Image (cartoon, rainbow, N blue to C red; front, side):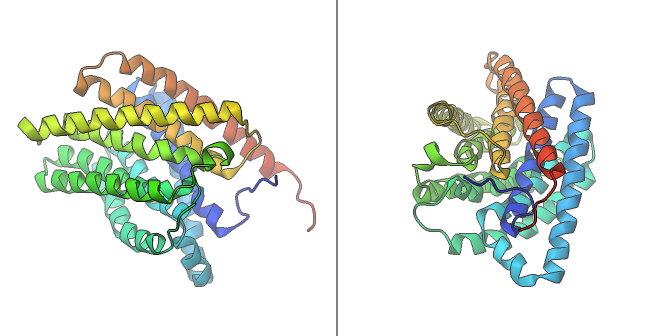
Length: 314
């Protein structure tokens, strides 16, 4: 099967936002376990990649509006929103609240424009990328909740809860559209089925840790987060088993949609350990984080190797 690479189509360039998400969430995880030098290196890669993609898509909008509109109507196009919000979340941890707030505003402005286009084109039997419709609202919710705590802003926390619930509703829609055969045949984006739940669990951890929610509301959020995390683990077990049964070696841009879910579940495990009082989640998260980092390095090396390969004339 022919492997597709960066630059082969506008849709794939849109999907490259998954690579930004992967680097940013791994950076956040490394910060949580105290490896700040590695964390900052991953953050630098994520930020540089985000700038390159942002410039590329702005240029595409100016030079090829029709092509930009076509990209905006695909699930991979939504990675632009999610990548912006995930990178912003890492900047909050760095203390750059105002920059992160600007990225939240950008993500919120882009999200409805892109999501409406994608929802209009949903059908049954879609690949794993369809779960990307559920990722941006959860990414926005995580960033919103972090900023709500940083700025002591209750309405922002309430908005984050709303995006959390909306993300779960969109996950159900994606599940209805998903072609379950992709578990065995997908080129990497089938892992978003688990990644979209992992970021919901990460969002749940932020909501549970927030002082804004107490009493019954806190109990409901805690229970919901535990259920989401359990479902996430179940998905990962199924997806890993399918990879063992049907290995799919070779580089494909959609493999970045495998790596960011690995980073998401690792960071979610680390973030859930303290607020839920489940101590074994921390060492689990550390192991999963190193696995995610190793996978990121392998994919990045493969990308560099392919980009350095001389192009043959068509």
